[in-house]
Length: 540
Ligand code: ADP
Image (cartoon, rainbow, N blue to C red; front, side, top):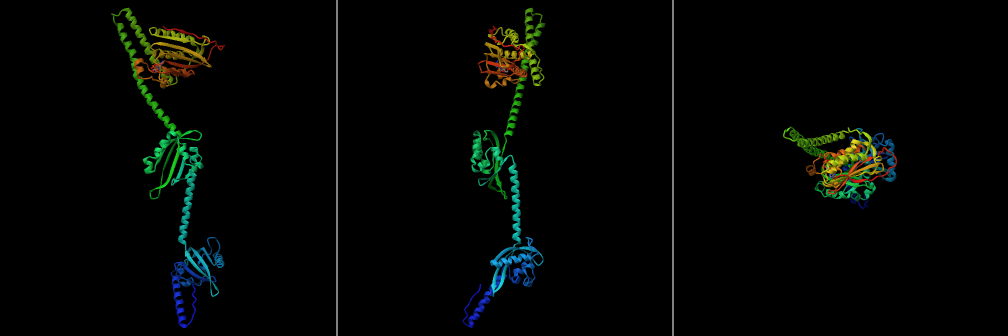
C-alpha cells in the first residue's frame, strides 16, 4: 500500500523517510518469507523475485531468475500441445485485460525437471509503467493426489459397472440398502417376485403383501430373531404368491456390509432366489425315502406273514400225511386226512403262485393272452366254485349280468380276468362274516365296469389307495384275524392296468366295500346290445 504524507518540515521529511524505509523492510520481509514464488515481470522479463522463486526454479542465485523470461523456465510445449511462448503471451494478454488471471502452467526447473504450477498474474502500474506481479505455486503434489483420485474414481466406476453388469444379468435377486433406504435392486426382482422394480422402489411393503399367508408368521419370526437383531443376519425360506397366482418357494438372505476396519455398517446386501424346483426335488426325495422305508417295513411284515402263511398249510400237510401211515386209521378218517392235505396243498400252491405273479408283474414279464371270453360264463364258473366254499356260511352271493352271453363275450385275457374277479370275491367273502356279496358289471360307453360288493367290515377311506400296494394290509389286526399276504389286490391292480383298465374301491369302515374295475369293452359280436338284468340269489 502507498502512504501519502503531507510534508511540513525537514524533521517531518526525515520521519516520513523512516516510515517508508520501515514499511519497505516489512514488505521485503513478507515478500521473502513467502513460500510462494513471487516474481515481478516487466516487458516479459523478470526484474525481481523472492527466495522461494529461486528455490522453485532450482536456480543457484537470484541472477538465475532475474533477467530471464518465464519462457526460459518452461518446456517448449504445454500439455495442450501449444507452444509455451504463445500460451504465455495469451495469459499475459488476459491478465492485462482483466487485471488478474490465474491458470495452471507446466514449468521447468534449471535441471529440466518439469512441474505443474498454479500461476496468478496481477497487473499494476508504477510510474506509468506496466508491471505484472506473478505468484507461482508448485502444485505437483496436488496434481498427483488429483490424478490418484481420478484413477481411484475410474476404478470405482469400473467396479460399479462390472457389478451392475453382473447384477443386471443375474437370475437371482440382489439388493443394496443404506440406512434402510433401498439403493439398488436388480431386474431379476421382477422375474422372481412378479413385482415391477419401479413399484417396489416406491412401496417396499409390496414384498410383505406377496408372502404366502401361511408363511408370514415365519418371516416375522426371523425378523424378530436373536440372529437378526444382534448379528444382523437374515435367512428365511418362504413361499410367495406371484401376481399370476403362481406359488413359488423363495430363499432370502441378507447381512450387514462390513467396512475396512471390520465393523458392521448401516448398509445391507441381500440375495434372494427362486428355489421352487429345488424344493420339489427335496420333497420328492423325502417322499422317495419315506416310500423306501415304508416298503422295507412292509417287506419285513410280509416275510413274517409269509412264514406264518406257508407254515400253517405245511404243518397240516406234514402232520396229516404222517397220520396216513397209521395202521389204526379207518378208511373214512384217511379220506378226511387226504382232503385236508389236498386243501392245504392248494392253499400253499396259491400263495407261491401269488408271490411268483407279483414278482413277474414287478419285472414286467407278464404276457397278455387275448381270447374270446364270455364274462357271464366266467361268473357262472366262479359261482360254482365259491358257492362250494361258502356252503356252511351265513352268506349269499348274487350276480348281476346286464348283458346277454353273446354281448358279454369280449376279447381279453381269460386267466387274468378270472383271477381278478376271483381275488375280489375271495376278499369279499373273507371280510364278510354274514350278509351278501354281489358280483356284477355294467356297460359304460366303451368300458365294462365290474363290481364286487360286500356287506363286510369295510375299509377306512385313507387306506383306499394303499391297500392296492404290495404286501399291504389295512392293519395288524387283519393279519391276526384273517391271515393273508397282502398280495391279492396288488395282483388285481397289476392285471387290470395291464388289460387297459383301472381299479378302485368305495367303502367306509363297518359299512361293507365295493371294489370296481374297468376293462375295455371289445365285443366279439358287434350287433346292437339288449340289456338283460338278472339278480338271482345263488348262495345258501
Ligand atoms: P390279503 O387279503 O391277502 O391281506 P389283499 O391285497 O387281497 O391282501 O388285500 C389287502 C388288504 O385290503 C386286506 O388285508 C384288507 O385289509 C383289505 N381288504 C381287501 N378286500 C377287502 C374287503 N372286501 N373288505 C375289507 N377289507 C378288505
